[in-house]
Image 1 (tube, rainbow over the protein chains, first blue to last red):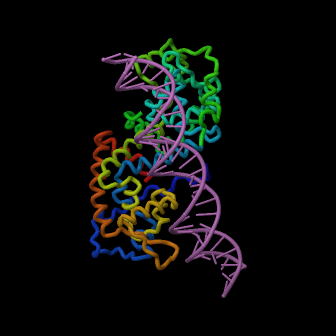
Image 2: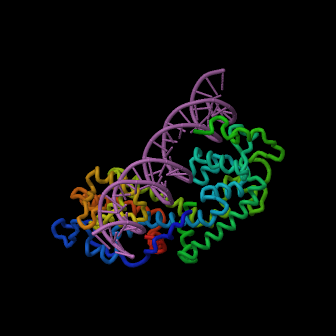
Image 3: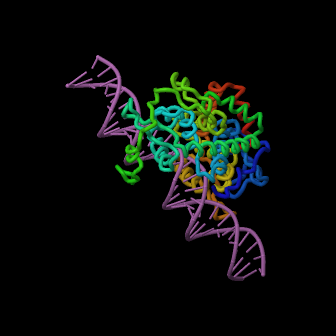
Length: 183
Length: 183
DNA sequence: AACAATTGTTGTCGTCAACAACAATCTTCC
DNA sequence: GGAAGATTGTTGTTGACGACAACAATTGTT
């Protein structure tokens, strides 16, 4: 997890929106041949320009932060977000096939193979050959997996509190509401 | 390498497990310690349980969707989100060093090397040796890069409209506001 | 019974974050 | 002035992850 310094504490501060992409190459006050410019660098403000208005950029940065916090918070039990999501869905819906889990979580079924290999080696999940369809496996949590998942959920709830602290309680709920279609 | 047919022994040896208490997934009711009942499975509904309340999961799914739309919308010009962010920042702040760009965008400076190699090969960005600090490079858009970026921005704006259509205009703005600290 | 579709699996490819190590080059401090 | 330390760009490695392609075993469809 690395002593990774928190997200760049940069934060707020308005971005100096400099002329969007329209910059007359000869009209510039942007003397920056080499070395540093005076307008943007000296004061440490680096404008994002159009990037500031793009949801994808903000979401990407947020996702990196949130995953790092999740991984750090669940670091003691060595569980990553995807592993947690797989165990949670299996725990809530015992007997699902790999295909069903993959489809529900938007994971490639090929990728789920490795995820389950890992979880099965740790005796958290078990693949049971289905009697009705011998191609598929019915997925279940082991006894160990069930008690482990309970702990994972407590840690995940702690992580979720970190999120609330970071963006605000109401904002977090608003976010969940806005993105509810994607879950 | 791999766990060929039997390297780890797990993938295949699970067959030997006893199947005492196992039931087909379409069979009877299922444990309901989490409030889920058999009806969840019968009607095809797969519950997410705690996952539904986790911001990270929703954000991950949304980010996948939004990046796919971005890549598709800017597919004709072959520009990916990260490349777009790099060009935008350089365009708005000519003369920045690689370190400065990497720090501003939260990209590893090692990764930025390859990104710039690619953009430089396409004659969109140029590395200019800095006279004041011979270790660093001053980054600039080429003339071609400037006109190209203008087009990229138009396409990115179109992508942004897709986002607004998907989650709603107000929701998109609310989202940008909530996550403004991460940009 | 022949043919198409599904399921799990293996493998490959490309993106991406996180690290480590290195040479060249500042910067600091004695 | 010069040694020690820090910074910048670079190369390389690792591992998680998404997207595909191909395959054997099995099911379903006609």
